[in-house]
Image 1 (cartoon, rainbow over the protein chains, first blue to last red):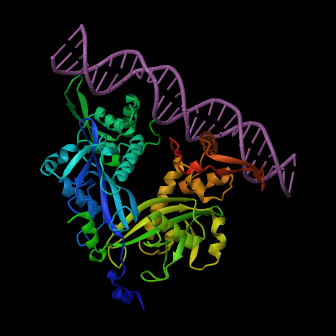
Image 2 (image 1 turned 45 degrees about the vertical axis):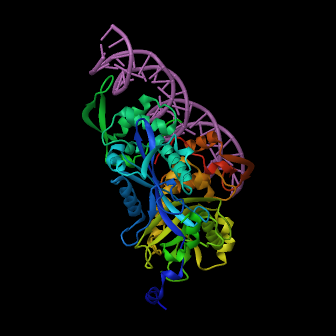
Length: 237
Length: 237
DNA sequence: TCAATAGTGTCTTTAAGACAATATATA
DNA sequence: TATATATTGTCTTAAAGACACTATTGA
């Protein structure tokens, strides 16, 4: 038998694979807190519980795993988040009552404003503050996945400005610093934070200013390469 | 219908999942070079080509994905490597001619001596130097997976001593430094390298010395926690 | 002018880079 | 003693921490 004959005689139905899903921990920053997107499960198992957005691969329409997660996030938020990164894959025979199951989990970030209107139209999707999420009983092992994503994002906040993707397109340095501070769980040295941003040249100065209380703050935009930039030294934590 | 009834009526055969495999990029260090374990494929597709060790989940016997990869690595090397870490999950409809397929890929490290005897007994398993691997035509997208693992390990060599798990139980600082240098692709400052090891207290001094040419070198062992330790500052590269 | 917030100056501290110097083996 | 390799000393440099100070707005 050659490979061609093998493939002709191969029938997928003869081999059962574990259940395979894709999930995402989508963060945003709003009203001085980090929030995570939760979805109410419409069907069994765990029907009625809240869990991470996600679902099955559509083999006809998804070319890659990443396309699956983008499609799912767009279904729930109306938009495709500017930052999406694979987090981990969890697979065992206990996490789903249907049997051996595997989920490929992603971390994603988006501006609150980018999906506010869309999310307001549906009851089965909501943002939950990270202060409240631990109290909820999430579906499957989704709490654990969230915790993993949170921990990774915390690490990233020490050596990158990835958390900035949870902010709107245009933001102040104080806002950016505060997202990092929320993730790290303690205040940062303002001067250090600004100094390294300046040196790494990761932001575009819009020239605009935001007037609220006090001195108006300069408004910045993320440069595209800022998703990949890594400082060679971590901030203290 | 309640959840119990749902599960009773649920039949996995009604839902086809993509093909799911687990693969590993297993590195070792021998004769001053890094090497990767390759396995000759015994069956279609890609029969006869060399590729990464890996295979399907055994739903009856594997409790988790990690157990699957450990089982596969033990089959090929005779031992369970001391360092195993999930690398990434690659999934699309092109990587396998049988259709939509997903692989969960791990990075692992082991001492050459730990599996030398076992590997010598089989023809279908071999170590390939990283200088030669790019020339080979590996099965599926295994070259890309290897490159990904190599890049990640290079990054880790800048802020951890994870590469030390490619060495035997007992090793000299010169050996450890050289593994890092091979990964990074340039010489390191000897003093910096030793200074940070000393400070982080990651090694156990065995008290023994290795006598070769020149001054005998002190022999060390990795402390268990050294797999997780991260320096707060990267070495230059 | 005061309160509030944004942003800067500058000294200290930490840890890496550079590289010379010393130490301990064998031939 | 010469050679080889291991190990240390120490000065320089880069970048973060600490924290006080100045700047710019509205009330």
